Amino acid sequence: MSWGTELWDQFDNLEKHTQWGIDILEKYIKFVKERTEIELSYAKQLRNLSKKYQPKKNSKEEEEYRYTACQAFLSTLNEMNDYAGQHEVISENLSSQITAGLARYVQELKQERKSHFHDGRKAQQHIETCWKQLESSKRRFERDCKEAERAQQHFEKMDADINVTKADVEKARQQAQLRHQMAEDSKADYSSILQKFNHEQHEYYYTHIPTIFQQIQEMEERRIVRLGESMKTYAEVDRQVTPIIGKCLDGIVKAAEAIDQKNDSQLVIEAYKSGFEPPGDIEFEDYTQPMKRTVSENSLSNSRGEGKAEPKFGGKAKGKLWPFIKKNKGSTPEDFSNLPPEQRRKKLQQKVDEINRDIQKEVDQRDAITKMKDVYLKNPQMGDPASLDHKLTEVSQNIEKLRLEAQKFEAWLAEVEGRLPARGEQARRQSGLYDAQSTPPVNNCAQARESSPDGSYTEEQSQESAVKVPAMDFDDEFDDEEPLPAIGTCRALYTFDGQNEGTISVVEGETLYVIEEDKGDGWTRIRRSEDEEGYVPTSYVEVYLDKNAKVCVTAGEAGRTVSRVPRALPAAPHLSLL
Image 1 (cartoon, one colour):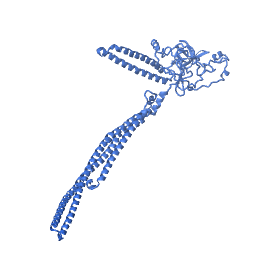
Image 2 (cartoon, rainbow, N blue to C red; image 1 turned 30 degrees about the vertical axis):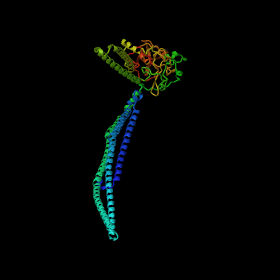
Image 3 (cartoon, helix red, strand yellow; image 1 turned 45 degrees about the horizontal axis):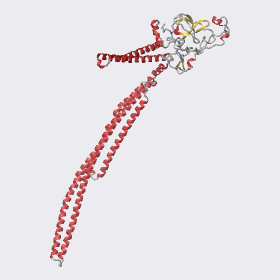
Image 4 (cartoon, one colour; image 1 turned 45 degrees about the vertical axis):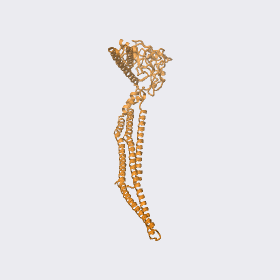
């Protein structure tokens, strides 16, 4: 099967067909180019999508990625970023392995095709020239034969006419012989040219054209093979990245399988747990009780008289529903005392860790400066050691400042965790850390704490540390009930000047009756006499219950329930663990 033998007369059609083949190749190149652009655009869009949903650094959104579901989503974003990278690889490989090579090949193909068809046209022109020469010699031979025939007839006519002179007859005979000779010469020339043409024609149809057409056929077949190879490469480029894309998808599946709903639920507890217990049942308030009182009742009732109302700070609390009452929030204090105990502990721990990291950075910087100073001392030409003294002093001051800051927050953390330092002179010296926060006990009431329905912990701060906090009513008022029985005794560890309504002042060493335990808010209800009772900070007293058990309740060890006095506690003069 050869185009040279089968298509010897289809020169023009072969020219059209080969041009069509080049057009197909260029169309395929255009297709691959558009695919590379699509892959590149797709990769860019995937990267932008992944970047758009990445958590912003140092933002609240970054904290949300503690949850396993959010971590799985973050893994999905990272895997999609890698996935986009593989589409960039596809685009790169298609461009380098197909588009660039085929573009060069098309140019070479066009040049080769042009050369082959140029040779074909040249052979066509040569055979056409030979054909024209043959036609010319043939016409000349035909003309000379006719002229010779007419000359012969004229000679015979002249020879037969008796009236014509002998000279005219001889002239006609010579003319006939001349024409005869010219006809013979034309015949010989025509025969020679005919043989030459037949030879050229044979060469044209059996040698030149088959050779040229065979070369064109081979060129076309190479084009077809190259196109097929490009298509294989096209598929192979995709297949090469398929395992990596599969790994990306496997990574997404693995991240999804790593989601732990129980762990996320636990994280929610850790994030929002206040550490308080739910408020207890609200007791029935019997307003008919005063009507049923008798003289046989306890001395406190008798001493009040019939018309005397019980002070508003006695009795059971009305405000048991206070956790559901939301108050305006103030600014966040430095010790996070506006937060529930558990959240406060977490915030203080984070602050301590942050300060420790800052201290380590400063220590590393101090060590580096010290080493540089030693180098300058050994090699004065490198620099002046004295020039580093100012920087070294500044860094040392920063370290000392940070350490003091760390001690302050560690003390607050110890208070929250119930790890208060032992009493003594050393503890008194450490209490100086609180000087910035502790003015006289009442004036330093930090914030009135409340738990709101949304889980937040609100506060009421004093407007200025030097200004006396205005007296505030307790959230729960005391009813005109019968006085509560004493459940134990307590001894005052420190002097407390109760200036707010509902509190009672005590003197260090004084012994009083306990009528209501600390419910978790840091306040204990005590009684001095039948008409004098109120609340004191639990950390200011040592409680002895009647059940033959010596109990020491401090602010850090108290139950986590917030009770009826949502008021800030004054700082104890000396933090101690009894």
